[in-house]
Length: 207
Image 1 (tube, rainbow, N blue to C red):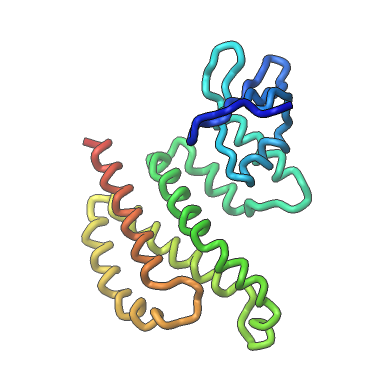
Image 2: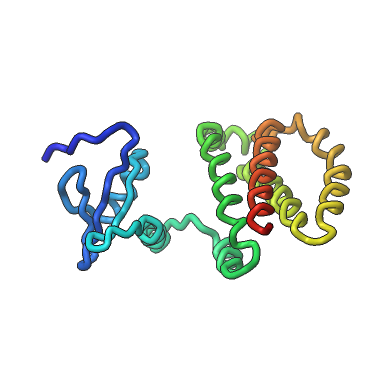
């Protein structure tokens, strides 16, 4: 059946019925969670609404997709990460975490092609004595350092301590600018700017 015409940028509406069935109003057919996962991979933007109330339940359905994917043999989320994430629910930093995760994933997505090239040359790197996951580990370490510095600013004496730590770590960062880690200084600067903007928004919420 032919798809309905939509305006550019208009989201596809998926209706969820009481029997848990999902209906794609664009293609006029029922779909599954796997179908929605494929739509996401194809960059098809959609919103899921309760068929009766019209409530936006996209977040709940996307969470269900993740649960289904994690139930398969090849999981994506490490156990330690899941533990840390669960521990943050109800914590005072809960409002900060979504913005941080979104910024981190945006940076990762922007560099997907670089990561794929790296994985493609994995054998060459191993032959040269470079640990296969070293660039990824280094990026994760740098992201965590930035996150910890941002979090320290929320304590009474955190701002001064963060500034002091920044000064101490500056020589080390300069010495690492030319290292082959897969993360250049511009990317690190962009991530810092995003976290700074996120901190400013949180400060406004606390006023």
